[in-house]
Image (cartoon, rainbow, N blue to C red; front, side, top):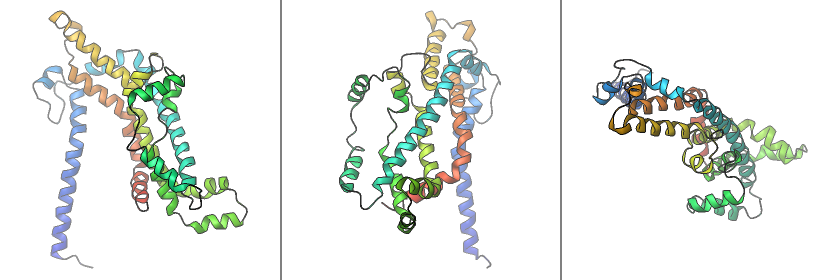
Length: 291
């Protein structure tokens, strides 16, 4: 069917709006990447707009000169992979029974879980709880200490509730157990929601900074974000040491190191997201259909 003039104008305006929105979204990423390869003078004088000025890699040399950076990178990958797997497993195990209409006390359990979204315990209470559980300065505090998320439970529960009840009834007639129903029917149909929850967990684990800084003191166990912050703080002291700029750091600026650190820490997320983008978008839409 031939498009009318009004439809052509609408599509043109829609495309122009989406292109503008994409440029607005991409520009901060491009700027950070360009600034990370630019000299300190170019950054301070505002010469960096779109492309790098006075190209150099001094900021990256400083970031990777810290021997702790590679250990912390490995720690972050370990916490992200294992911690996200534990979070997703706990979410599935919690959301599956809550999706059953005949679960005794279901409404009370759902109310208690939802209530935790508004009545989260304060930091001191959490810290004392971790201390009493002997999780301070332990890798387990990063793996299981923050594994549960009310939003993830609700999202997964809503998806399970949207699946046809007839499939489960047919499986029960064939003699399937609840574990078999979950592993062979529900989970294969939940790829989109699982991808969504996995991405949320991965991003939360990878970007965690405050609690690792408070709970982990051993340098061999700290994640990447803590080490990067330490690098920036150390650089501030070196740049203004005795009121004179150290010649070793004359080509560096705090802003350049910050931008280089952002690029270094964002690379894994930029690599991962394109592979699960379609599942992520689909999972968010499906999880919002039924409450």
